[in-house]
Image: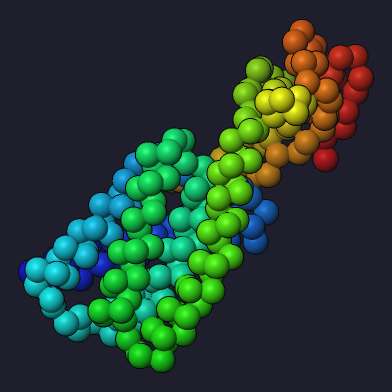
Length: 234
């Protein structure tokens, strides 16, 4: 049973770390990072966190793997960062509520199994400071983030298929909105659960409603025409 508990702790750490580490790697490589199954990842993180807490209550095994002890010591601040970032991509309120469970479970595991004591103490103090900053930030993000939504109106592929353009309607509710044309290089690195993609180039930003009847086509792979005007792709 101890082996099962250790495996579940490894699995929990991996899924908690996946999104922030993916974003970090993508930033340094010049890519964007995307989870392909957001709700599935949220459920996996929540279930694994609760399962580990329940097993801790029931069996109270002393973790023998020193690496896992260190990982559990830093798990709480890592879970706060992960949940804060994932709030921005959660599809609904239910997913957001599920995420709230994760830092609580991680804090419990850090207190019970995290080692060494100094690292665990620093981790918990850091987590407390982060909470003071992240709670109001998350509240404002959820409050105002819902006012803006993007809808892809049309997608136009370049002649060779190396690039594609998206005409996006950015709806900001009572504030109006905008029309955005983004160009992507079609070089996705798909790993099933997540993918890396080149950062899009924003070639056009206009007023809300311009996307109605907007004429978009490619002259070449490096020149896109939007309503009769040419734009070069870098």
